[in-house]
Length: 142
Ligand code: RTP
Ligand code: MG
Image 1 (cartoon, rainbow, N blue to C red):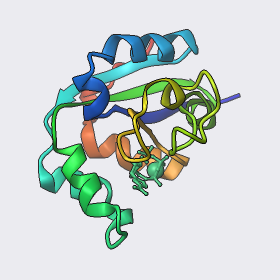
Image 2: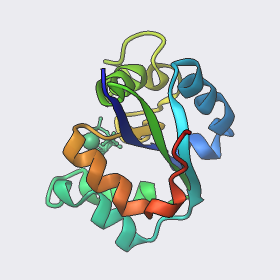
Image 3: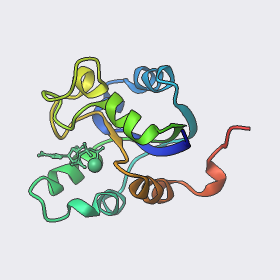
C-alpha cells in the first residue's frame, strides 16, 4: 500500500480543552507519523479560504467564527492509505453518528465543534497541506 499524507487539524474546541496530547497519542497509536506540525491562530481570511468549498451553506459563517475562536493545531500525518484510515479514526462529522471509540465520539461536542479535521481525498490533501505548509516545513522520514 502506498505511503500517503493527510492534513489534520486539532480544532479550537479540542485545543481549548487541553486535548492536544491525547489526540496526538491517538494518531501515533494508529501508526500515523507526524511529519509537520504548527499551532496557529487562524485569521478570518485563512479560515474562509480553507473552507471555501462550503461558502454559501448555512453552517459556513458559524464555522468560520468557530475556527477563528482560538488556536488550531495543523499537522501533516503520513501512513499507508492514511486518508481513509484517518477518516475512520476520527469518525463521522456528527458525533452522535460517530462510531464508539472514534475521536469525535469521545471528544466532539456537536457537528460544528467536532474536535478534528481530516482531508477527504488525495486532491484535498494536496491542496490543504500546501495551504498551511511549505515544503521545508515537512520533515520526511529517512
Ligand atoms: P472536516 O472537513 O472538518 O474534516 O469535517 P467533515 O469533512 O467531516 O465535514 P464537512 O462536511 O467538510 O464540514 C466541515 C466542517 O463544518 C462544520 N459543519 N457544521 N450542520 C452543521 O452545523 C455543520 N456541518 C458541518 C464542522 O466543523 C465540519 O467538520
Ligand atoms: Mg470536510
